[in-house]
Image (cartoon, rainbow, N blue to C red; front, side, top):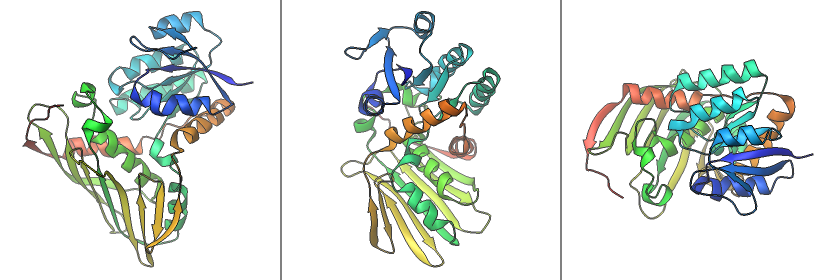
Length: 307
């Protein structure tokens, strides 16, 4: 029997990714939505999570596709009601919130999943396997996109807790922390803040690697035209390039694999396994890098940003 699920937040990411992924997985049944302003045809709609929890005790799982600022209160309420919880990335607006949610889930005996959708791109496991036996010399992330296209009119990303350019940048960091066979940490960062915004529009990071490899990242939200989501790797015996956010893998200049956009279907398959086994996955390593960059970063003020 399919697990009954409610989706909280019916915005762009919900319509583009969550709803198609849920609909395409027979292990899940989308039973209800929670949103003040939107709904899905044919699906029961609630304006508050409280009313959903009171009226639908049969729903086992809550998937939160809302901005990070209010997410803690929603997740806490769902966990306290004995529901399994799936968190859109980033899993919260602070590490302390995430630690508290993981503890609550453990105490309640339910599943919680801090999702990193880019880790579930088709070519990421292949790159991880290729890199594992090799000595890393250099890893370079270049993640540049157009915020006006991907976040049209979304003011929450510019507010404290919204993370600015780290909203997409954390996707690259989630891949990096998945494929590297060892940990790294941010050693320095430069962050560009529009003079009228509270979060950065661009960032450059350098990482300390225990093997001495050169590890760096550049994020920018001002790129128009073709978008860039690349990770370039040099090792002692070969080079690799992951592009299209994880859907294309080249090794030594040869195309090895080109996948499809299966990230969210893979996320929901993983969530079903967690629920079935009453397990939890709250890896916060990508979020730690963002918090360190915001703490260590040298702040530069740049031109104001307007939609």
